[in-house]
Amino acid sequence: MGRLVVVSNRTPGKGPAAGGLAVALRQTLAEREGFWFGWSGKLVDIPEPHAQITDIDGLTVAQIDLTRDDHQAYYGGYSNSILWPSFHLRLDLATIEAHWYEGYRRVNTQFARALLPLLKPDDVIWVHDYHLIPLATELRNLGARNRIGFYLHIPFPTPDALYAIPHHQELMRDLSRYDLVGMQANRDVAAFTEFADHQTPSSLDGARVHSVDFSRTEVVAFPIGSDPDAFARLAVSPAATKMVRRVERTLADQRLILGVDRLDYSKGLPQRVEAYEKLLANDSRFRRQIHMLQVAPPSRDAIKEYQETSDTLDAVCGRVMGRFAEPDWQPLTYVKRAYGQPSLAGLYRLASVGLVTPLRDGMNLVAHEFIGAQDPTDPGVLILSRFAGAAEIFPDALLVNPFDTDETAEALRMALDMPLDERIARWTTLMASAQKHNVTDWAKHFLDHLAPAKVDHSSTRDV
Ligand code: ADQ
Image (cartoon, rainbow, N blue to C red):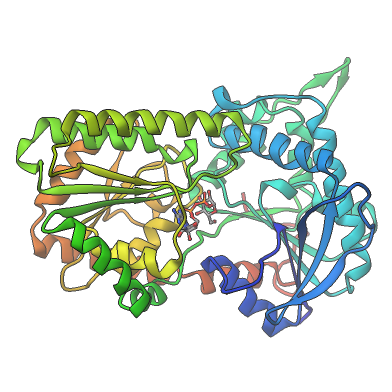
């Protein structure tokens, strides 16, 4: 078996791995003597063409630096102001600047040039996420003949949204240069298939652009997961218990409704608080009996649309406080900072309701982690958006349309009133699914599929 080379925008840093993804891939990299390639996080005037290789806590990491302008065009520009909103069907929030695409391309070329000299012929390369869609093309143009797989962590857009993306045709051609493209959910594979089967070749300057040939690329749903058993252990660890005690003191006997997200417009945070407001307005018996805690550290805050989401959320939270707070009761707490996994696990376990209501999400790992952390004898209830990839594997959650705040308010009421036997029955099925879709098996399934011996592309097409 060849080495594994993982490529992502950033490589993991020092200290304990923050997410299940990093933990799972580290394990696999250790077994296969591979390395992780990505941006160092440093912005320089003139980057070195060669990657710097270092050992970070036993993990071999190869990193390159970028110029400020390239990074802005590639990361803040094309990746996060065009691809992220469009793939999440928020065309209204996309900003298009034509020159960003060149920066995006340049960085992908720079990644390929620095990576190529480090490759052995039988290395298997696993590229992660929308920042690096062109990487296979760039590597192949330089002569790489390795097996190359790509995993998209975010949803795949519907054809209309895809057509609105500048250079979408090139992006799709780039995807066709991978041996395997993994997506989160069946709905993503279906959207891809719809595009692939009904492409309308665009014409540019009178020159007809031909349809993309996907006959050598397999596109398969591999829903990512977490490590729910690790979350179960973490939820009763001393570090988690410390956090739980602190929060319990302030909660007194109120029941906790919990949201945990990056502050991102895709997560539906203002709508979620509005639903909570409707619950308090509609059903006065809950006042003084419940408390909502929303943890949402800012992310990508250099981008205007993220600042605006933050302002909107501030306003909605302020309105709910003004409307319902009393001198001795506050309906909600909104914390704009990140917490470590032990603290999160403790909070998940303490919560009576986990409110996971993104407007659109690739998977949503908070849903998996919440399930993992519950007390099996007295589990909380998961309210989950239909538009998270997680909805496909967790049909026993209370599924809601997050745009419909009346429906979410009603789901909150149902969750708070749900009898113990129903909570246990639902949670038991959810936990079985979270365990089945654990992150270690996810990585294994993807890599087994990408393995050279297994796949014969000469005549098959999986989409
Ligand atoms: P994200 O959009 O970041 O990831 P999500 O999957 O919910 O979304 O969270 C990733 C991780 O961040 C989780 O492990 C969670 O614990 C952590 N996290 C979130 N909020 C936090 C907070 N307030 N404090 C500390 N940690 C926090 C993208 C896609 C998702 C997909 C993942 C993985 O957008 O759809 O599930 O990649 O593929």
